[in-house]
Image (tube, rainbow, N blue to C red; front, side):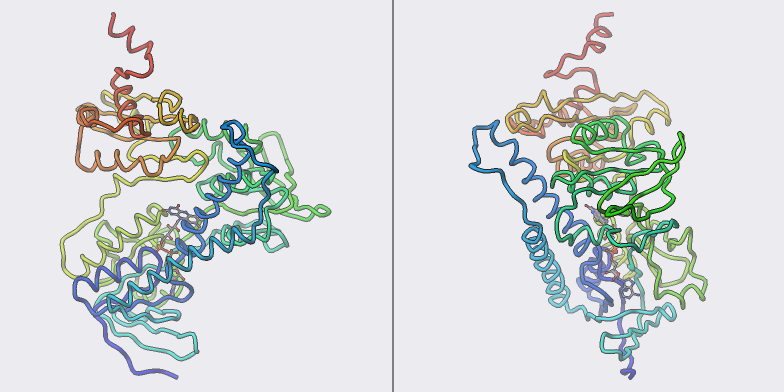
Length: 478
Ligand SMILES: Cc1cc2nc3c(=O)[nH]c(=O)nc-3n(C[C@H](O)[C@H](O)[C@H](O)COP(=O)(O)OP(=O)(O)OC[C@H]3O[C@@H](n4cnc5c(N)ncnc54)[C@H](O)[C@@H]3O)c2cc1C
């Protein structure tokens, strides 16, 4: 049954972090707004991505740290045990609170929520198939596409077998597996590998490329790889997986490596080889000529597609695959669609990775900066020389700063405690075009992790106080 068409100024397809933010911002600007969501408000991020994974990672880290408490004089009378069903229930509560909050915000902003699947028939026309099977036509002035992404299903056999899971399933495990082969060594894979390792699972990572989290700072990746290995995670690099099969009670992953075929056995296999854009429901726009590139919708820095009045944001465009970028794109797309001047700046995007310890970087890596040329200075300050890190036992890793010709911060990488929060200092410094001298002139509170950021900036200029920089001292004397 079709309901009478409804008219809106702006319609958003998808209520993930990109879509719901776009809807709220458009409503704030006075537009009559509709949002269509087929599965869950909050999208991947709030339901099966950022938030649930961080809730479970937090629990896993606490559990792993229990074993260390004796060193601090805290004696547990018996070894801690872990109940996954309680952890998953906690995670579900967090997800419910957050998604419920977003639904309330949409309603408070008078956004019309359509609980169904959208088909964009034309730039100004969307058909929604509602959950009860009826359809609703929407007429719209502007259209924002925020359909997000889905996990990639690589083309090898055995993907549908028992105990073969994707990241969505990893959020709802009945228990921690005894052993797990993780196919993929990207961001999601290493986060989940850390989580299961902390819960006592024997983890093996099988990655096709020659390093984990390719494109990140090489020294950070080396330090993480060493740290995972020390914690018992097996890592096979340069291993191209061909199949997953049963091997008795276990699963067997077969891969081709430089030295021939290799097999990896585990109770479970986690397939985490990346995500791809999800342009479902866009056939009408594709027929109208919507430009696509490698399966993603093409949008410029004003989030405009090649079709008039149609904008695209978030994982559907797939510039960064990060929720915080999707949110800013959502805000800006709404503003631009409603006639405001704005433009995305993708040069200063913080890249958080929630491993143990955390990784966060922004701007250029040292290699990228050196390839660009000029008088690049870069150096590291280790956490072991930071008082707060020593006091809290978080001494693994370092902070690295990369400085350019005029003292500008070209990039930074933090591998250590609270890295994902601390990186904002460098993002802000870069955004405000502050120089290294200005970071150094800023008094940082003591004793805090933030002091390491200032010291790393000093180190890059060859004048760290709390470590002795032999080469810099020699250069000063010559
Ligand atoms: C395990 C995991 C951990 C992650 N951790 C982080 C992290 O720590 N930090 C970070 O920044 N990013 C993280 N991400 C990535 C992050 O989740 C995504 O970048 C983000 O969700 C993208 O937002 P989006 O709005 O573009 O799309 P999505 O969140 O995918 O939302 C798209 C929505 O559109 C809906 N939809 C699609 N088609 C239609 C249709 N035709 N009709 C109606 N509705 C439709 C979908 O149901 C979905 O709800 C993680 C991802 C995963 C999988």
